[in-house]
Image (cartoon, rainbow, N blue to C red; front, top):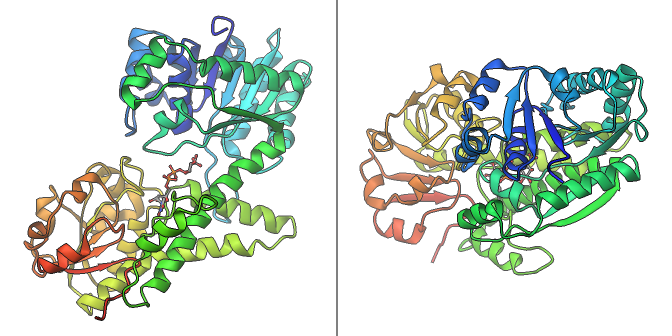
Length: 469
Ligand code: UGA
């Protein structure tokens, strides 16, 4: 089947490049499209331009060895030469919390203009996260207007959201929990289902072998759910909103636990996670959630609900709890160190989570802002995100970046563990004892606080009620 399909993927961000790479690895002839010449040039050299585990090898293999992936800025011509187009462009937040759909509009325009001069059936699949009804009212309308063709007759239309996590996005694309297909019509849905079945077919071939060696499990076809277009759009928002709710729930409880002597949120999370109706995932209390996805999607749903005369109280609280949570790290520091004016505070970890250099909406930004507003001097280190961090919120001019992890302890009054990179998990009490005063505020609860305290560390952690006996 992959011989019949020629794919174009619009957008070379996380979703686009990884999706293009995985389809190309399965043998589909794939063209990644972008307006950015530098990104296109990098892909054509087999290179990547953001940090993501396993992606460099994948892109190198499909571009230079298998030669199944190329990239181009010639979007209209490339779409004409293909028969399936996946829309994977970004949908960033606007200042009012709603979704900026301008990249979606231009991708749809490209497709419409290409289809105007093309014979034969073409399947269009929206993968970007878009608020309900966007596929039908915006994408379909633009393509039909530009091409003078009809969805469901001349071209197929689906919406298929992705659920991949940054830092594990190659894994999540190859081993998804589910595939959701929102279909405009039966033919479109059937065609896309056949493509996914081919991608995930269970076979002892090179593709399966490569990924089995890396991840230790066999490629299998996940459950494929075929639903309406609007249902697929809503599933994506419900999925992310629910996960964000779980995090804010456990953070809310962590704040309550901090007020109960001898209670540790980790024990609460462990126990409730054993209830199969709850499950243990996404119950890690900490400095809050970051990156564009959870904040962006929950905010987009809040705005959407309000525009449709519903007051989404729960989702608003999820965001409010999250905003407070990062600041809780600073409160804990003050409770131990006192006035933060002119104190040297170290930040361990800047990216919104480990294994990525992504700084968007990272809790570290709120924490640093709060520390600076209280007159502290901030020094920070991250294994990957320093260069990205320098560009965020003018941090490059506001704080000091350590050249190495070791440097972070010199003359420091408190260390705030913000992102749980493996490099930090290895640290021992003796490392923190190099500080002026060994104060550790554990925002991800990665250290054994009993051991640390025994070894002379002044330790505070999110969700740890003080033991009074
Ligand atoms: C999230 C979803 O998990 C993906 O399914 C979805 O596809 C993606 O958004 C998206 O819409 O593109 P991602 O934001 O990459 O993925 O990362 P997660 O691993 O979900 O973590 C998000 C944030 O939640 C991080 O800041 C993490 O530190 C925080 N988190 C996560 C917690 O504070 N506690 C937890 O228990 C889990």
